[in-house]
Image (cartoon, rainbow, N blue to C red):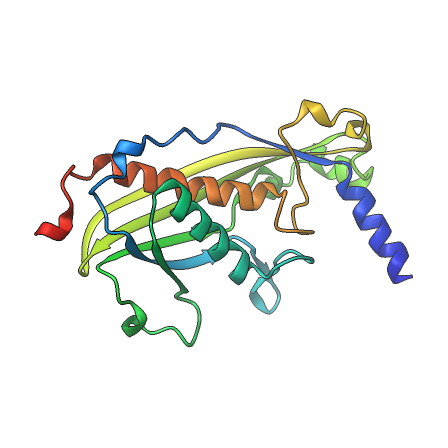
Amino acid sequence: MKYIYLSLIISIYQCSFADVDRNLKPFPEESVKTKISESVTILNQNRIYFRKEHTGWVERGPLFGEPINQYFPKKQKEIGQSRYHWKDIYIYSIDDKSFQLTDVKTDFVFLVTANRPRSDWEEGRFSQMLQLITYCFIPCKQKFVQEVKVKLFYKNRLLSEKLSTVSGTGYLSPWYIPFPFLFQMRDNTNLTNEPSIVSTLYLQGFQEAIDEIYLELPKQTLESE
């Protein structure tokens, strides 16, 4: 029975695709030079997979693959090394009970916060209910809006704060199976970390907010202050 249920879930995700409303812009290399130290700390409060249940707010991450407390820090470290040329990157979750502020050893600290993405399905329109009842035989479309806020601190002083709002659309229907080329990506949603519209929007928002912070910082390094 378990394998039948698993096969049903996998077959549903074969029908699921997504588009992001805008692509991430290339980041100019000259914007990175001399602005921020090569050693940074990222403090995360990532609640994009939280949902409200009768027991309160509960985190329901992807069923397979790395736990999200390992997956997202790994992706942030990859982005930091390749996009911003950081060398030493220390990442913590402020929701981790073992975390203490004394763990932070770098002058530059990014505080990254994000709640669960908003969805137009929360509006509960009749057309959406009809789509669910027919198991998306009538093609389902779901709009997601994700906000990611990033604050940059230097020696405990707030330097900059940016809020990035990114959006995308998920599509689900067996009619889409022969036409994957019509969409930017497959969407495994809560099955795996990637490909997933939820994780894609979060990571894009993370980068866009840091890009804006870099572009507004003065050209000289702040370590000379």
